[in-house]
Image (cartoon, rainbow, N blue to C red):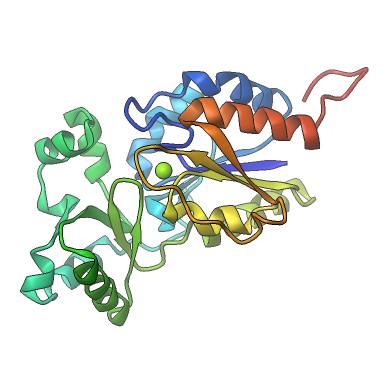
Length: 267
Ligand SMILES: [Mg+2]
């Protein structure tokens, strides 16, 4: 098995960013040697402390699928295009541009007050390579016009639980395939089933592309509409939000697909 997971509102509590409630499932995954891959809108700079807290050097799909950060691996797999995104924003019609306030338009204190992060964490969130998150303040028609303009200029906007994130090739699902192919290659056999957990629209593709998808409840925003594969039972939803729901879902899947081996050491 291999597990891909979103962080905010999924493995991490939407408000506190903690994951204590998921420790039983995390420890079981580690004990059984199941690879865990983070898939987040966070930057590589922000993943360091999370890896430390997890106690595992897990790979991370960063900046909403903009790039892959292989733990401790110097190989750069994605080209930096943050400056191109900022240049495109500057070329946007002023009326549309005024409705978007990106991280690059704010200082650390501004990002801290918007996210509830400490200024040190906000500084890590501001160290971007592949994407620009921000707050969009227009009505729905403006948002569609904004997304259309981005599309015409080779960029995509993805709505997460908190931010609209702009990137060139931001797809958690595409990066998921790349990570899995690389891990399969290193292992010499395919990792299956692929499990993916997320709470928001920017996780939808990843959840739909997995063998087993999990929508983690997040009362902070409207629930995701029915997803492709949900009616067939490939996708399940948690009853409780955040790490508590994550824990129950992962332990349930482990019980169904990777029961503990008997008569030998675990893992
Ligand atoms: Mg999320």
